[in-house]
Length: 158
Image (cartoon, rainbow, N blue to C red):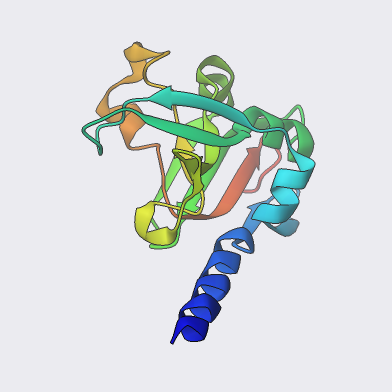
């Protein structure tokens, strides 16, 4: 029985690390990546904040969205859409991303986030640092269970 439990733990732990993520670029191409590759490629940021979905403050570690835009966007990128596993989507402007520095969180309280805990990727704004955005307009942008990120450029045919 212990071996079965150990095997299940190893399988489900690797799912968090191998969580696929598609990044759609402004030119129409798609990059498929995963958490291990992202954590190798990008620096992470950590902050503590209160969010409306929890009664207490939480610590979040993740990749600054601004770094994703620097790497995958261009000077015509004006917005980023975050699409969840359940097809919920929200779009943040590059101006808001620069002003409020959200992260694509991959850890909460030091632990990788599972799908049942809003993971493996969650767009999080630091509401403690920016109380002026502690409102429904920004709460609705904090997409969890992200599986696709879409960078919008002015050349997009939308």
